[in-house]
Every structure is written in structure tokens, then in C-alpha cells.
Length: 56
Image (cartoon, rainbow, N blue to C red; front, side, top):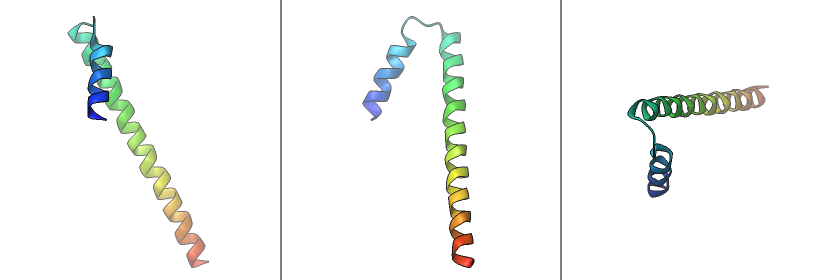
């Protein structure tokens, strides 16, 4: 997985300025953070539903 991600990063960064790479990096960080948040919210909602099912 690491080799694949490194290869993709190199392809994306090819012919880009440092500023463009920094902007892309910030965008991908935001994407990763949002996906992590959504995952936690989804897992949390499922856990709450399980507790409700057990206690009712």
C-alpha cells in the first residue's frame, strides 16, 4: 500500500509547483480528516442503535 501511495503522489506532483503541491496536500489532508470523522460518526451511530436495541 505504501509503495502504491508513493507512486500516486509522485504522479500527482509531477510538473506541479511547490505551491500547487502544498494546496493539493492540504486538500487531501482535509479529505482524510473528513472521512475519518464520518467513519467515527457512522460507527458511533451504529453503536448507539445497538445499545438502544439491547436496552429496549
